Amino acid sequence: MSGIFSARAWGKVWDYRGTFLLGLFNTARTAIFAILLALILGIIFGLMATSGKKALKIISRVYVEVIQNTPILLQTCFLYYALAFSGHSIGIILTGILALGVYAGAYMAEVVRAGIEAVPKGQFEAAQSQGFTYLERMYYIILPQSIKMILPPMVNQIVNLIKNTSCLYIIGGADLISLTYSFVTGENTGSAYAPAYLISGLLFFVICYPLSRTASAWELALKQREQRIEMIPGQREESEVAADA
Image (cartoon, rainbow, N blue to C red; front, side, top):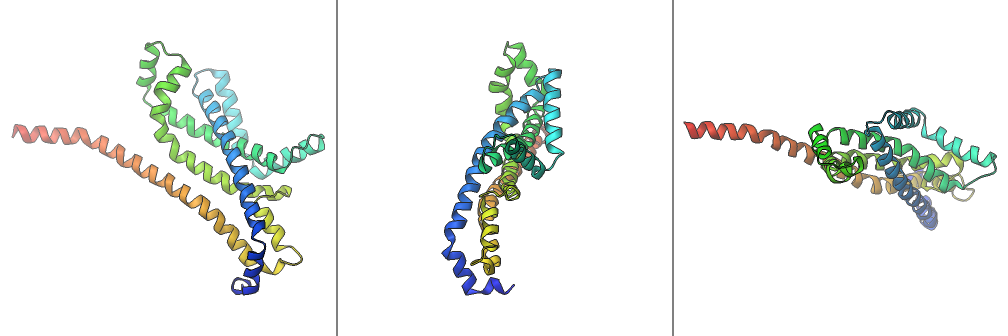
């Protein structure tokens, strides 16, 4: 633990701060594009799961179950080495984007499905009676109502995705964790392992903590709103009784 209080070790971290900034940049770049891919897959497979068509529901279910019940590390290694041995290597960053996007997309799909199914069925029936197509019903009627239920858990999945960028370490990635490991095992920087990992953890915390707090605040606001809505009928009855008295 002496390395934590070593001015020399902290000086090395400062001298090589570019390494940590590069890792942070690569982590952010990987996470942003993976989030976009996950959102696209989540919406597509979430809509498929609630489409009412058996074939689409089966495809969505298979995708979700297979991805959710296998480790992200295994999926990342399979994608990277399968492509490399087939002569179609796509690079570590792109591999990470695809692996993380597909993995998080399965969880996003479940979030979208749950949000859509939480909307009262009467809304579906009313929209259908007005002649809306399935996509029109979703775009104009259902998704606007379900978005408030989808956003909090979706933000939590985004936080998990950002932390899961560390799995690129297993394939020699250039993300924050990978470059931190390279730093602490370097011939000239190995003695600075404690400050290096503290800085790496702090950078992850600075990114993930505000997002986690945002998701918690949304969830609390949603619960409070639902409680107020549930209390309104009771309050009306009480006011009516008081008026009769």
